[in-house]
Length: 231
Figure 1 (cartoon, rainbow, N blue to C red):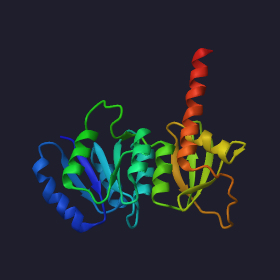
Figure 2: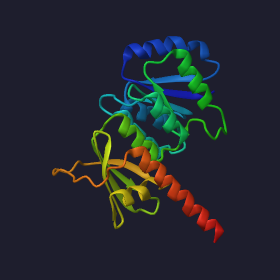
Figure 3: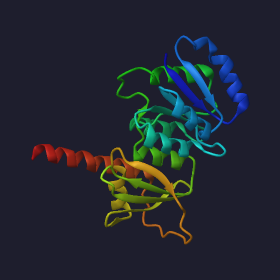
């Protein structure tokens, strides 16, 4: 039986879920958590097949929860619940692998998305593993100001600085600004975590919007892979 962990701090919403999803108990088992801290404890003790999480929560929010998933459960598919997405952003983000549930939504919509995400071996299904691009998208949607640290599987570290969800700067190796952002976005299986915000203001070196950065980074990555095959 597939286990679906749903994380939301609205207790009234949780009660509705607990009652409404009972009729689907033969399709999947639902486990509820109030915040990211509770969810992490559940993930440590249960074999969860799908994570559905809100972003804005007390104590440990959804973004912090997803950094844990990225490090400890990188193969876990997930769906993000957010009130900040639009039809245009959903279409753009789903095209590169991010799945959102826009609040408010109906129980039927939630069930449809869960069942779709639980289907095996579907290449355009729920996100499996959190890419740098996916994580940046969620920060943009939540308009979060943060320093995001990214470490490659080779141990090389880089940083993004975002203010109110907008990309201001990036540093990686000897690169800065957009060139650093392109390299960081293209990293696979990277470790993602939040760093301490700088005390001094960060000068803005990036003015391209996030989707433009992501699409250019993926284009460069594809071109590099294609050239590697030809040689």
